[in-house]
Length: 48
Image (tube, helix red, strand yellow):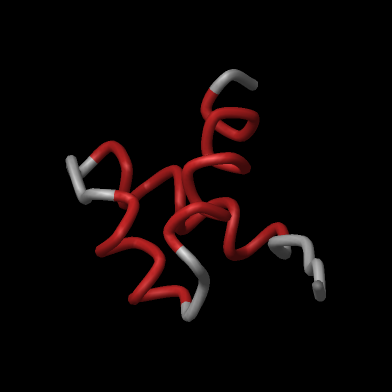
């Protein structure tokens, strides 16, 4: 299984799109990532 981290730019986009009420699935599609990655990393990004 290959793991990759979100760049600082991706994290900023994730945060912005989340505040626009986008779903994890829609954000994942936009960033080219799996929705589960967005959900897991999103929890950490949004808690900062």
